[in-house]
Image 1: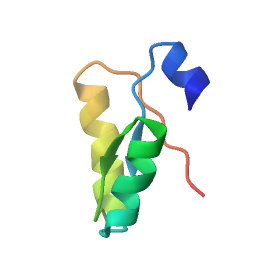
Image 2: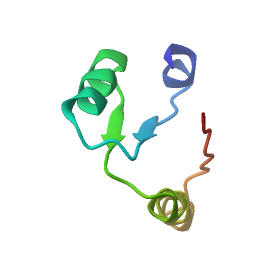
Image 3: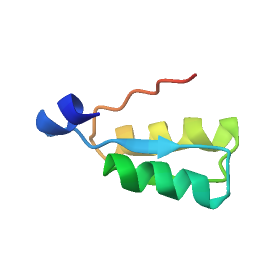
Length: 61
């Protein structure tokens, strides 16, 4: 995460989790979080970022 951020990349955690743990992880890493997302929601997030002109990629676990 630190390397991506040092390169000026915007990092967003897109998770299906809806609890405070997602917020805690994002805060610890200093990144954005979108929580409670379905797989389709995550795909739409990437599509919408691309439509806004961002280069976007999704990395899953």
